[in-house]
View 1 (cartoon, rainbow, N blue to C red):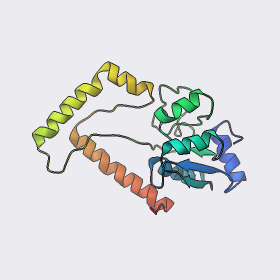
View 2: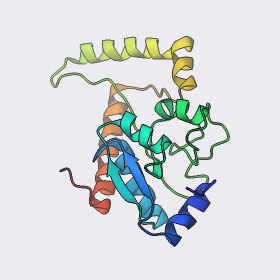
View 3: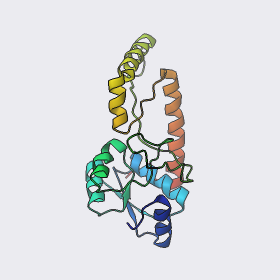
Length: 189
């Protein structure tokens, strides 16, 4: 792809509608939704190529079979470091420590923040005492400097909080991603 910046990529895509493609980890995966949000914000036509997981999608990106991909930094970092792929933006709210020279989508004028996140969940009906214990112990583990540093070195953030705050976050994310899915017309096959 003859683009060295997000601005150049968008200009190229607008000049060549339908010519560029993007890989995703599968229909409905975070990379698919991120790319569809990018398409909506940029007003471009790029073709979705769903894969069965991140590894084959990333391999085809590095081989030049697809034009672009939204992937988590920890998985893309080896390809970036090896010079097989070129990062144009991160979709997080702030720059990622392991890629300090790569601007966010927001910095580049696109009000878009997306990405995969992980959390600890338990079975419905779990007692408040058990929830408090799991949260307390997980906070200890993920607050430890060596653990936190390991995640940061892989390009991941480790936000910690209360179970109630996490529940509200899940509700907000479900609503936000649901809106993107509806606007983009994503349908599971």
